[in-house]
Length: 268
Image 1 (spheres, one colour):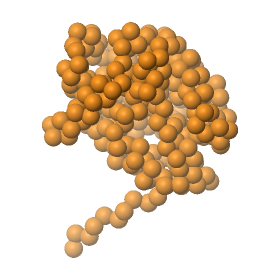
Image 2: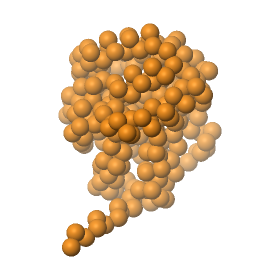
Image 3: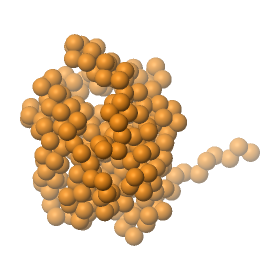
Image 4: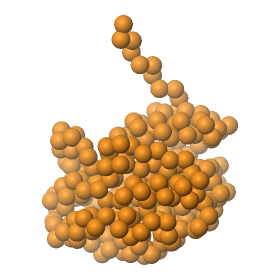
């Protein structure tokens, strides 16, 4: 059993590491012996001035290089990836399984397992097209509505943070389109990568139908858990649920030792 590993976090379309919010801190608290590194895909976050590749394979190679710069030749890492980032994680596990101890795939959709109208809901396609006509703060507000089921109070604070991120690290429309092209072109292998896999999804996802995750888990024989109400960004909407599902999975698979959560208070 490994007592501490490196967790590598990958976000999706146009989102950077800052969009994880407090999720990395929650993961560190649950796995205190591990280190957590959130990598930005080229064209997003700290690399927003870089042109985004139009191939998932190129994004994967970029992430491999950035991780080697950060940790050198360290032991295999755990990948935790969302949406398009999960495509990168799948490609990584497929081409370099010796670098991966396990992978958590969140709200992703992969060819050839699901039809296009499940991989991207038709209503979401229209919403994404409208996003290209919005500017500044309105665009972030629309993205939040599309990807999150947060209550109003938490949504307001999140929107303020996202607006600040956009002003500091704006993602160009050209890069957004290049990332969409990469995601649309990627075809996953028929057989599962030879690493342990956990698939997480949200029943309330307005962007990607949760049936994509169900189908993927079925075809690859992966463990599956579905959050009942969260939106596409389940790590934002219900981070405690995500961390707990991961902790249970890693302990069952003897991948990593998690810290036990605090005991519930007595009700008398």
